[in-house]
Amino acid sequence: MSQTTPPTSPAIQNLLREVLFSPGNIAGRENCYDRFEPLRKSELNPIMTAQQPWEESGVNWGSVFRSEVDGKFKFFYGAHFPVAQEGAIVIDNAEQGSNHCVMCYAESDDGLNWKRPALDLHFQDQFPGNNIVFEWASYYNDSNSVIEDMAESDPQRRYKMMIFHIDTEDDDLNGNSLFVSPDGLDWTATGTILPSQDASTLWQDKSTGHYYAFLKDRVGSNRSRMLMHSADFENWSEPEWMFIPDHGDHAGTNFYSQSAFPMSGRTLGFLNLYDLTTQTTWVELVESGDNLRWTRMPSRAHLLEPGLPGTYDAGGAYVGLAEPVLVGDDYRFYYYSTPIRHDRSDAEEVAALRPSLSFATFKKNRLVGQQTEANGMFTTLPFVCPGGRLFLNFHSKGDVRVAIQRPGYSKDFEDYALDDCAAVTGDDSHQEIVWKNQTDLESLKGKYIRIKVAGSNLVAYHASFES
Image 1 (cartoon, rainbow, N blue to C red):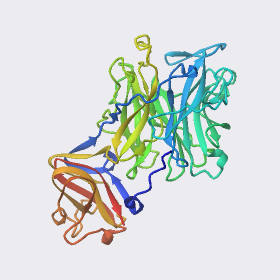
Image 2 (image 1 turned 90 degrees about the horizontal axis):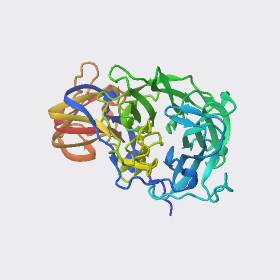
Image 3 (image 1 turned 180 degrees about the horizontal axis):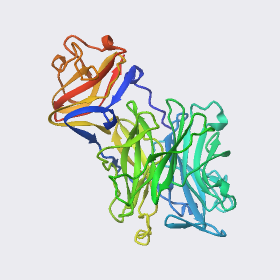
């Protein structure tokens, strides 16, 4: 049986607002530091490997999501196989033009065991029983990025795709082309081509329905990231820079791909850094408050590292395979894992291994936050109080207290000071906070406030306001 999307919990149904304790939301700190939880690679990795003759290159890039229609996990991925073709071009370190690049489809009830349906839509004579759903004769097709658009009113445009294409005959077709489909199997070009290089991803903010294209270009010789956005998938903004190497990076720093997903009132993303000095990639966390202005974390912590030489992801973990999927209390983040370093200098050593599908996990709403060392505290940026009751996601062996402060010079509101707060301790993702004379924040509704959290050896991830 297929899994259905888990029902919304009562706490989420009553949600008024969330405040993520990410670096971009913090105004002041004492004995306090940013906290990041490294992604945990699954012991099951890799969970899908190349098995078919049309997957000679491996299982590449693509998008994994759980359908809101039937609950199935769906995986749209790239593959290519040798084909005779005139001419060739060099992209980065590899010559392109001697392979036929296609997009394939696999599905799963649990996100772990994948099936390739025998569709026979393309190349059925050459590869009977294949699962190829898209082909486009070219020098190169890459980084197909697919979304299921539940806000779309036209059922013929339910699925949307962005794919990088270098054409054999028409230079005007080069770039990231947009397609639509009713079912993910039959694709129609929209005629829109976004200016970009490869390793680009498409994302939709489900709260607004708006679309965002995270694109790759270069500043000098360094791969960097651009952003375009659209309200209707037809009219797009002009590109603007998102991430370029800065004074904290060395000359061999490149930004390769990225993903985006909402968390506790912010938008977070996983950003690939490709390091020329090691020819491998790792993953950083990035954030935005409006989906347009993005920042890297101050410490630039590595949340997902490449594996040891000779392993399935020794060359790196490439992101861009859609949003993490919530399964139970854990998010699964699917990524494209490759055993081969970027310059392919070790390709012969790992000839038995090819790129594959893998995943890593992190706890729900526990990816980034703040931690105190000994007695410490932090305060948030001001925001408009929604009223309701306050709940804290934290763990600590000592007492934790919360104050509600006025903006500016941060004077405590009457009855909401630290001394008024009933101390809490332990490990709780949904601990209610009350004060001696106040059990909710209705009296502050509509006013600008700050949250102040104080405690000894505390880790706090986010707060929620609920009715």
